[in-house]
Amino acid sequence: MATCPPYPTNPPRPHWWQRGWVRYGALTTLLAISGLVILALVREQTGTQGFLVGLGLAVLPVPLLMAAFRWLDRVEPGPWRNLVFCFAWGACAAALIAIIANSFATRWIATATADPAGADTLGATVIAPVVEESAKAAAVLLVFLFRRRDFTGIVDGVVTAGVTATGFAFTENILYLGNAFGTDQLTGDSGFASVTAATFFVRVVMSPFAHPLFTVLTGIGFGIAALSTGRHHLRRALLPLAGLLLAMGMHALWNGSAAFGEYGFLAVYGAFMVPCFGLLTWLVIWTRQRELRTVREELPAYVMAGWLAPAEPHTLASMHARRLARQYARRHAGKQAARAVAQYEAYATSLAFLRQRGRKGRAGPDFAVRERELLDALWHRRDVARPALDHAARATAPPPVAPWPRYGTPGSHAGYGYGYGYAAAAYAGYGYAARPGGFAPVAPYGGYGHGHPAPAAPAFTPAWVPAPFPAHARSRPAYPSAHPAHHQPLPRRP
View 1: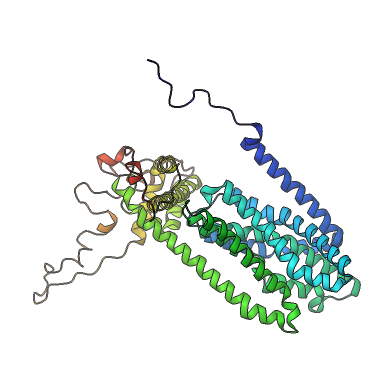
View 2: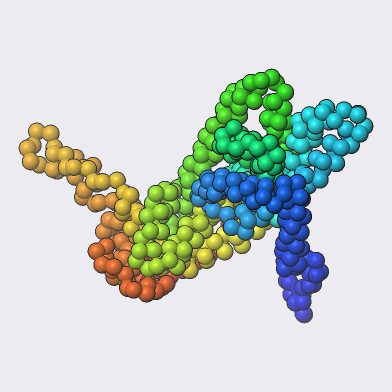
């Protein structure tokens, strides 16, 4: 009797609007058009000279902010295309929405109330925070919905929101600095007494983190929602909304600080903005350390299954050891090897986070498929990455403890052993002891030691030294891996 195949032989083809290149093309076109329109609007308001001056001054804090957010994302770095999209959305789409919506709302209020001064105040303290934070939050929402694999926690939310706000602040600073330069051209002011200098000091020197600080609250809301289980639909919806409302409130307080008197701005800056900035910075760095601890705690299961070397969980949980591994690979095998080591580190980190989500009942239905993809990616890069990680593990291992003689027996070392076991089996905790069935140290690339340089044109595939692992681990470990999800349903949080 014929049976139906488990899967259709000819699966239905997706519609043209569901194809990836169509979506990428539409998004790129939208951002490009927004960029051209915002460029024309800013140039029209500031003039050509004002635009060039504003552009030159506004670009100064951008590399510093981008480097800071990239540093926060070093544990599990997201793809560059996400950061490029976020920055472009903030600088083009969000800025265009803000300029059009703010101008329209302020004019409508001024016409309805016949009070232009009151309309400007209301627009700055109420309309602008709502419009601008909503426009910037749209980028975070798009990444959260369509790049869910890259959005797994608080740090991802902070980085996504911060980069979007950096792009928005870049365009807004061009407008403010260009207008200030135009004012100085009319009044003849120059030097430190000019409006341009004062605007530059307030917006670029004192508060370059203002817009990122506001939008980061929205990103934290999305990040906590990403950590919630799929059963808590209400919590997943309310947390981003709560973060957005907090961002709007802080933005409104910042914009309205000028209405609090002569020293209102300084009071809000010193008593509110700086402490909030310090608190959020501590929170993000603490979350980053938690991510490293997750790597150290979750990866040993894959060591037991034969996918990773014994030293790798501790090495991958140290940013210093990771950097040493990349430097070693670059020095002995070239840039491609260093890139492969960086990819190995990123895939191993993603694997640790995936296993943690599975253990806590937050993994999706594609858990097994994603785990196998990550394990395959690690296995294909093992010949390049493991010698570098082995070098980093030995370089960052704790030094052996000096011998401790037995009490009452001069010159004897038989009592407590050689430094509580460190000297007798150096670095045994990292898997380098010559014990039966253990992992032997991995030799450097192609037989080149520390004192011998690599060839002039290093190859991407260095020679794999014989017997770096026991016989059962030199071949690919069999699926399923160490995770219990392959044998039984994932545990669910009560």
